Length: 206
Image (cartoon, rainbow, N blue to C red):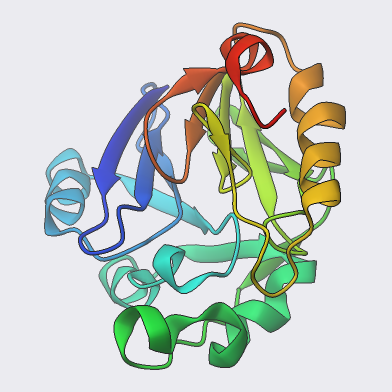
């Protein structure tokens, strides 16, 4: 498994492109903005981007969805069923405030807790991790966790926006994420990579 990070312009949102190195299949996590370098890499390597998985529906994570759909027409956009309303309603996803225009995204596939998606040999376990938003999810693939805006290095996601709850966020982290092996690498929606073990010992919010 190869993980490539692309930093969203104007949003500082991490977009991840993950490919199964034995095949040409790949998936993406979040799309803060469209990145031409990602597009070029996919075309050069002749990859089949099977899914774009949205960890949650805020505007800074969905700004590039429309362009990626055009670039990769066979790709399916995936989100939690509980996040569908936020994705489809600009007044709830703050896209106007972030981009100056409304953005509405209708997912092709909706998932729930402990669903599994397959990308070639890779199994993607969906974990519902509400708190930053009502329908926030994290994705576990082998020893890599894509945590969206639930858990950051030394920090956690904000809970003062629509659907946010600090008690739910801490429950998600303690009961879902902190039960994973300490060596699990955490690839968050913003900022740098960390591990579960490091955050257990050093995250001041938890």
